[in-house]
Image (cartoon, helix red, strand yellow):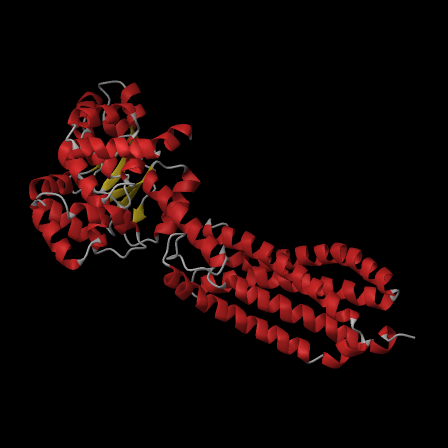
Length: 456
């Protein structure tokens, strides 16, 4: 952590800026040998895109590529516009196919055409194929740089082939075995190759139980699959099981991190496009719709309370205690909601078992309601000197926590069945249910036993 702070210190940033301005290539090369590319990229982010472009021109595209790939796509796209044509062409042609496709998608149409024109024919065709896949599919996130072997090769020949492929492939820890028509027939790890007898055939040592995904599969499902089996990479195939590419763990990790961030934003009723440095008006624009939705929820709850205005007028203590009912219901609902959204994201909930999740969360609400309700009921009864008020408080807490458990589980499950993000707006629905339900139960019971609550 200390090293990272040192790399982003004002002194370090100014030193890098001065080295670029002076054309000190030797000094920059020394920096590369002393620091991790990710740390250097962090320092570069403090510079202007034109200065980053000068850095790439000084070092050369091949030498600076490893650092450039750690820079966010939006900054990359701005930097490319300051590069000379030779450096731009070189950099684009040596980038990994998946990163290159993502970057080309990030730029405007005119610059996209320019970048495509700089690519070699086969690289251009590859990019066009990758960017045509929908964003949320496996095909959009795969790379076509993967190592392959033939099943009839002997291990000695296979090792030599892997050595030749290693320089241009994204990973060689997994080597995929394909036939002459590129059908995926097996998988062999680099370790298996190294320890195998040199005379053995690849077909003898490869694993035939290869788990692959189709190019049109949802990328979230692929991430879940990778996490379940601890894969370093997942092969992507077409409908005839022909190899198309692989999705590496670093890309899947980024996807899982993005999905976790998205769920966190949605549970907080925020738009994922908002960042801490978003302009003021943009933040207001993104937040207002969610706040209006919450306002609608509050109006429904307020209307429910207004139905019992006479009861509250007769027993003023109800106005103080009903907020506790709503507060506990909201907290319990968010607990259920968080557990179920996480389970849906990780694929832990099966469609056939939805009802079990609902019953379990309702049961949790019932048990918690009995315990917490007894505590607050006893406090309310002692505080008011009226056991009836304590009884009503207990029953209202029990009922509202059951509602919280049911809706906290049901809302995200229903949203998933409608092919919507299960976290999207869930908290508004759950809060509405617990506020309205809690107020109705509490004030409804109070109305039924109103004579017992009236001062003697």
